[in-house]
Amino acid sequence: MGAPVIETSGLRKVYRSRRGRRVVAVDGLDLVVPAGGVHGFLGPNGAGKTTTIRMLLGLARPTSGEVRLLGRPVPAGLPEVMGRVGAVVEEPRFVPAFSGRKNLTLLARTVGAGRDRVDAALAQVGLDGRDREHFAGYSLGMRQRLAIAATLLKSPDLLILDEPTNGLDPAGIRDIREMVRELGESGVTVLLSSHILAEVQQVCHSVSIIGEGRLIASGSVAELVGDSTLAVARVWVEDSSTAIRHLERARYRVVRNGDHLDVEGFEHPEDITRVLAAEGLYVRELVPVRADLESVFLQLTRGSALGGRSVAPWTLSGGEAEQ
Image (tube, rainbow, N blue to C red):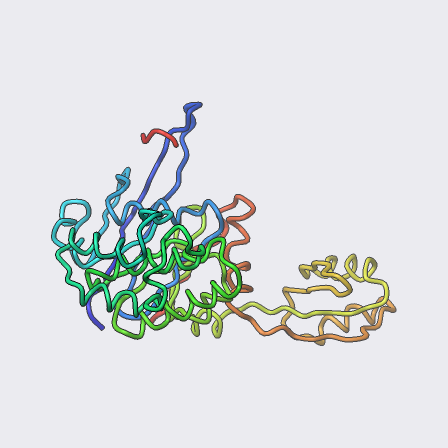
């Protein structure tokens, strides 16, 4: 495996709010994104994902720490590597009265790309049959695809996408997912920031999960899911309120979920039935739940979501004024 395409060390970003309060958006983040494939960049809202991406691209200045993009320091080395980097961070802006093709052609001239690159970019994002239509008539999904096409004019080695499926319907999400997968398979390294974890699990080779601006976990999706210590059992019992009381007394974590209970913290599923039977409560059904990326994510970020710092990093092989 070659050198990482993205590296941060001790990356920190502090803002000062309008009321003068210091807000730590990124707090000592150590991030490594390997070359090749699609890398998911995950975290709860407010975890620091977009702020980190803005610092990677030189759009925001770190308070402290180091950033390297394609082996070059940021921001000093950005002029050397930006021709190899594409990014969609904000809502795409194009001329509404121009067709998709004309918008791309104008952009191609600014980066010195020829008509063949316009044709190739449109084909890569699946717009080659809709390129003569006015941008104003494009759906949100088509606009996102055109924005990605614009980044592909440079034939980038690294593509950074910040929540590219926001606001899309299921069909649009599926289209973007397939396009991102194909880009990763074509040799482009894609950093994908997203909160739709089921989509991430289908398309990403590896992920980094952050919370409160810090790295919580990183590794391949298979490792994170397969090596997770997460154990959840769905339990159906007649008197669920009494069952919750006894299970919590036995130090299990219990969440009422519709007509069943989600129970965590056991070593063996039969331990649950033993606790309940001792109190005269008999389980109608108990189903162990297979861990997926979403369940692992929720487990790892629980401390962050509650405002705590209870989770240490887990690494697997493989409108405000700045302060």
